[in-house]
Image 1: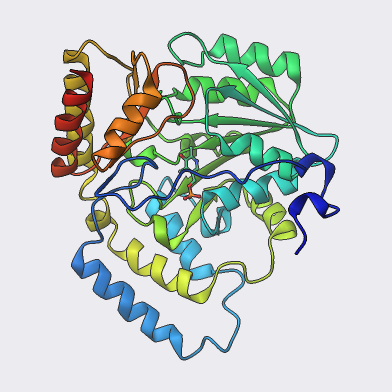
Image 2: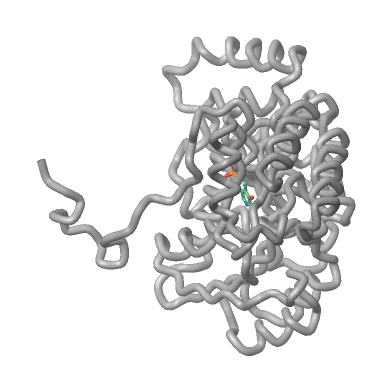
Length: 356
Ligand SMILES: *Cc1c(COP(=O)(O)O)cnc(C)c1O
């Protein structure tokens, strides 16, 4: 048996470990920002019906252009978007990868504002795109001045703005996105994975004005559909044409398309727990502040909690009690996903004991 080290793997991959949050069987998993509420039963039945209707044709390749699904996603997004402006893939990580394959690559550079989503540098590396991280301000905000200066200095081919930002929860206003579009001749991707939790206006409203702007979304978070793997983007028709050049033919299986279509038909039901999750998020925030911890303002379904002397110790103590949170490596912090009311009760009870 050969070891990985013995293989003629790419030099820039040599010695690396695969990335991914630990997948542990625990009663309370609050570590990857999923919607921890299950799929509502009426939706589950619709999904099964839709899947059943395609099973007999699985001998055939699926619709390579997934026109029905793109129309449904365009309707869901609203703002007058056409299905020709929408593209989907197996999770928004695959959307990001296709985007980097089309607009990044050797000799090109991507830029984002750290701390931010840890997949950006990984996708940059795997597509041989150079990657620059510019620090956010002290409160994790990105201002018009910061974005303008960063883009003028580094002249990236790709700029990524995560809004709300993972792992800090920080929101982003449209004037910063507009400033980014004004300050670069490259592409600007706004990652709106948590948009449904945020009160802020979506960057889709700027698409008419900026043909190099791309808004990526996912059904993995608010939409309670992480296991189905469905991410998508909205942009100009031309960006969608670029995605077609790099996508693998038939990348979106007939089962995925059928399941996502059924889920989208029930959007209000799939999103019914968003407000409840925000209530739990704020409950976690108040409790943590009551214990003297600092909680960063969040527009998403998670909180970055600051002020732990030894976050890894707290992480492990919670895990020993069956509560899994995330240590993203920012000193003195843990990132905690807001789950159900019961999960929050358990989390807060255990956290109180750990902090005592
Ligand atoms: C979770 C997440 C994604 C990716 O989710 P998929 O499951 O691949 O759709 C993308 N961006 C951010 C910021 C995320 O937190």
